Image 1: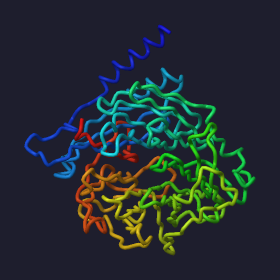
Image 2: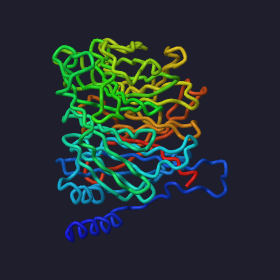
Image 3: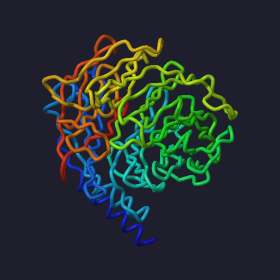
Image 4: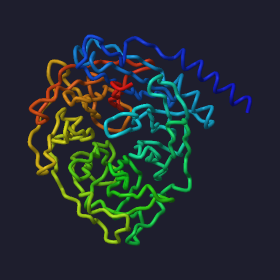
Length: 449
């Protein structure tokens, strides 16, 4: 016990020393009362030699929108802060910080964004950070690969996609008291389970590779959508122990390797196709993407024994012959009016109207600010006037063909009430150990702090 306390104490000392403050992230200008203060968090997952490194960059939102090129972030070496904490808590070191989420709050935004959760895809770690201080609070190892995680709306759980472990894991979350507990009894074994229809969850024809990619919980807190690497999808009741599948989809209805998920106007929108260099199913095309929608009011807590129900609506396909397309980023404009689907190979954004489920526009991001931005993930400013994108570098860690020339944060001005946009600037980031590889990006509203 004494040695554990000593380790934790040393972690706290190292954490303080590791934070290099080179900006004033989150600071509100006293003369601008109309400015809604917010931060933009970007994680450089560059992780050479699986050493558990990576950098957190926190930008002030106002600095980014006024002059992105000169914006300077507060930067934290996660290898010196989160690394020792995870080692102390789990006995193993985290590797490659990949995804980032904040806890939520009340409907008006109050009470949320107090904690940040980082998923490490090179290992099974989930790190919990105090969002204000950037200090690690706890670290949990769920298993093989924590690709992504999503908090439930009631703030009681975090649902984790344990990718190569082929499990869906659940962590109990008490943000007020900083208590986080892995609930092993709730684990859903996606490789060895049976669906409500009696089929094998992982089946060579229906769902050949059940590595979970991204979970997304519905706003009513009833269900979690889970995309699968080899195609197909599950809708899960995350409130039961163990968690339970309530709707099953095969790869003929939902194609492989989706990650973008977004709820809008009573539907959950899901994409597929993320440009893998080696497709999860031999013979599949490595490029091309689809977008689907499921009406949420048709889901029920009672398991549906009919596969591929409720029906998946196919919104659109993009499969340009001889052209690499690679969809990953998705976000919703203010008021839920338009869905933005980013393509990191074609450097453009497809705009969908969720009221009609139709494409209403497509705009490019290449201009004087970047000749190859490669937008990876999106998040919207609190006022909805800017969309922020993580821009890939020339040597990304992931096995995708999308390479970019300006790694950092892309500042996209939202135009025509969300029907269009323009890359307004780029805040470049460097790397402490090699080539930068930005991936996770999130906006944190601090106007009520």
